[in-house]
Image (tube, one colour):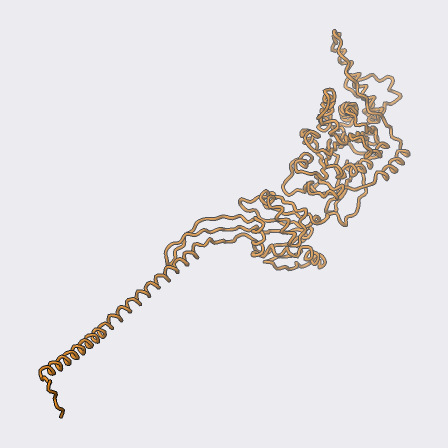
Length: 592
């Protein structure tokens, strides 16, 4: 047992012990309190973490929901493009009018009876044609060309997140309804659509040409036409319709009153029917071949018609006709045809009267050919080549304009009334406009022939307004000399190729003909200038006027006999035959 020190104080040690114990107790209590605090705070923290996690989940869900709503609305509000139109069912491809191929959704099948060689040729020449019946490809092609008809309208769609506004665009694609391969190449017809027209397609012509060229189809000469029912027709003109067609021999059929000019694209003869007509208008730009094409037509009339030829450009293109023409003039003078036109107008009146008195027939072309030959009656053709020389008054003097005005009046009268007398007036021009051939003259001329021209207005000047889809002279290549459009008998307006005979060949032929069959040539009738009126002219009685009129008609009749246009008087009775006041001789008329 230890010995306590002398300074040991029990109270102090007890107190220290107590303080130590008290301190330990307090520390223990504090630790216990802290432990209790921690223990009791765990639940709160767990609850708080749970609340925070729940809130985070809710926020995340809201964010996802919001983003989903925005995505759905963005998707639903995206403009929609819908396609309509396009090919519907099978499209038949005709080769020169005969069905050969069927196209169906881009697939090609051969029709029974199709010539295998033609089938293979069509596949080679137009290998991309079937794609026009495959709607996705067709839609892409015409959309790039800007030829779809687009219509946009608003729409509202109800979704999980409420109504959404959007725009719908409907693109109407052209519908191919028929394909034809003619002598001139490919022709595609697209169904009429409301709001569509050939004019709209014409505005995209360059793009169309480029698009078809990229597809392997020659679209250099592509034309846009509109059919009578409003459909749009693409005419490619990628072939020469006259390849492989034989040349023709020019003939003048006096019985039927017609001339063979050339051949149509179908290989049929192209006739100019003079019978029942008294006027013809021929137009074409320089170098189109109009004069060279008509020269053999006139040459074929040798000995069967009376020709009066006036060349307004003072050239030699019609020179071979000098051998067979009653009158041939290439002076180009403003007054050159005036006297002849006056004579022919008088002849028109006297010939009609004599024909009717002797035959009871008022129309030259209705008189049987044999009867016409026995009476020495022939059709009369007056050709005014480059007629603008006499009808276009631009730059003319006052006197020349007066002459031009009378020529125009005589030409108009002959075209309007010359049919019954068998007189045909033919006007040609390389300057087809209203100043060269006035509209009133063109409209009265039943026959119209148009070679290549540069503008639709020039074509209208020559042939008038044509039906939609008719061949156009503006589409004729400059290299195709003698190519023209004309209204042919039973076929309407058609494309033709005129036959060609070299002027040198015609010169030799007509020269030999003239030697074997001499033709009575005359100089153009000189134009008499009106004499100035005397200051005090004597008054004429009715008897004087009648006598002068009868004398004038008798002078015209004698001139016509001299020119070979009327049969000559019987020498046995001519001396005792008094002039008649009606302008014809009854005895001579009986010979008709």
